[in-house]
Image (tube, rainbow, N blue to C red; front, side, top):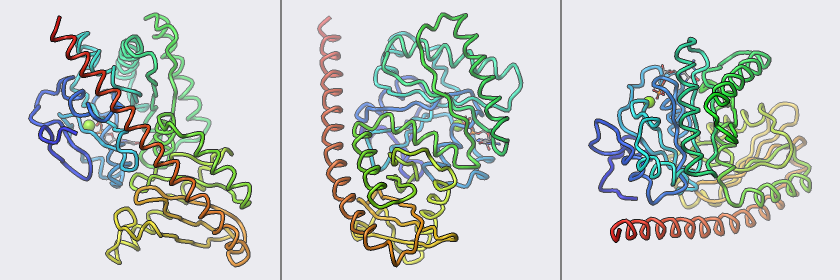
Length: 369
Ligand SMILES: Nc1nc2c(ncn2[C@@H]2O[C@H](COP(=O)(O)OP(=O)(O)O)[C@@H](O)[C@H]2O)c(=O)[nH]1
Ligand SMILES: [Mg+2]
């Protein structure tokens, strides 16, 4: 990370330095060593900074009402997989108007574009937003065909499932129309309906991150085997600082259970803070285990895998009867996950080295031309 060039505004996030007018170069520079990079893009006021603040800084969604319009791109590294970096691209930087050389630099090192669309705006803003989404997607995919295009249909807070499905279909229709007119070809758009006022935003970002985790299927297999052997209801591998889940067992997501799990981590965080401890930072966190018994025989247990990653396991039954088996299986799972995480770190490091070498050789080629 080129630390000289950046200032750190809050938490782990860092912003491009000295750029009152943001440029494409800021984005490339601030994450050059941190490939893979995820760009958060969208019109001004679509909700990008609120999303980053709520998920990575654990701010209350109500605080987002008072956010300033950011001028500089801000990078948010995922603590447990620091090579995955989200970059909040300010709406003032028009990615659809950058030069071809700049587009090459920006999209070449980007693995996902997360385009935030405000679902509650009027027709003209919506049309503009969809136009920008399609223009950016077309250019990005032409340069980097591997790039994922993820669309957040955002600010759908308390609406019914039917309404959300209807709005999503409507947006898909608009994009198809625009897509047809601009001959986008085979760009695949992946849609998510989100709001910072519920866990839909964590679920969406979790799925976006999962596509970038090289060892995702190994994690999923380990968790699924554990689930079957322990007769659990749902088990997640969670990034403790953002509450995003890297992986879960292969059953369908139970959103209420995930919601409860997030609250459980919040609660443990509060308790540890009161004791001046932090399960994300202290060495003894590695030994951490917590358990809480809720209504209807539901038990949630937490097991630290390392300082940044933990297992949340939800099961039904009496703790006295089930705990010995579950605990034994959890320790086995924990060891396997630690090995897989170490292996993943090595492979991501190699990936970064390859990326750096490619950059160096293309730079040398450029000089010798
Ligand atoms: N109702 C609602 N408002 C939101 C949501 N996310 C963001 N906002 C509001 O949208 C406005 C613009 O948000 P901001 O994050 O600054 O947008 P940005 O310019 O894209 O970074 C703020 O007033 C936020 O409170 C959401 O999920 N629901
Ligand atoms: Mg912003």
